[in-house]
Length: 261
Image (cartoon, rainbow, N blue to C red; front, side, top):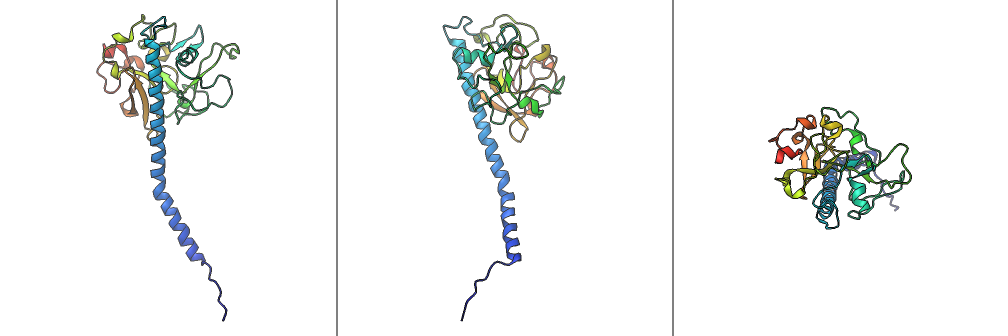
C-alpha cells in the first residue's frame, strides 16, 4: 500500500501568507521606532562630541582668541565653523575631496541626506520638513569651488556669526564684539549647534531659523547648548517666526544673547 505526501492547499498557503503579513504589520512600527531611536541617540552623541571639541577650542591656551567659540562663516576666508575646527585639529576630517560620497562622521546626522543643502522656502516662517535642510553645508570661497582650499561638509547648523570672526552668538544680525564664553549667563539653555543648515541668523536675522525635523517621525530636532548638553526638541517648541522676533522669555531653548543676559 503506497503513501502519497500531501502538499499544502491553496487555501492553506493563503492563510500562512496572511498570518505573515499581519505579523509584519504589527512589528513594523516597533522596528521603525527602534531605528529612529538609535539614529536619534547617534545624532546626540555626535553633538556631544562636537560640543567637547568646541570647549577644547575655547579653553586652549594656544588659541589666540581664547574663551571664544569659532566663527560661524567667514566670507573672506571661506571657512565655516566645521573647517576651522578640522583644520586646527579639534575634529577629525570627514571628507576633503569635493564630489565624493560623504562618510559617517560626527558632523553628519544619521538622518541627513548626501546632497548639498538649501534654504528653499524658509523665509519669515520655518519649514522644518523641507528636504533641503537635511543636506550638507560645505565651506566655499567662490563659485566654482576654489581647488586650492580644502572643503569640508557639516550637516549641523550653527547659532553664530556669518561675517568677520564673530563668536557665538552673533544673534541680532550685527557683528558683536568678541565676547568671552565665560560671560554668557545661563548658557545651559543657549543653543550652539542644531539639526539644520547654515546659520540661525541668516539674512541679518530677518529669516526663520533653518532647523530640520529629522527625528521622531519628522516632528523633532536635536540641539546642542553652549554648556555641552544635547536635547531633542519638538518642532512645536521651536521658534515659529523670524529670528529677530524671538523675545526674552520665549519657551524652549534660547537663541539670542539678549534672552540670557
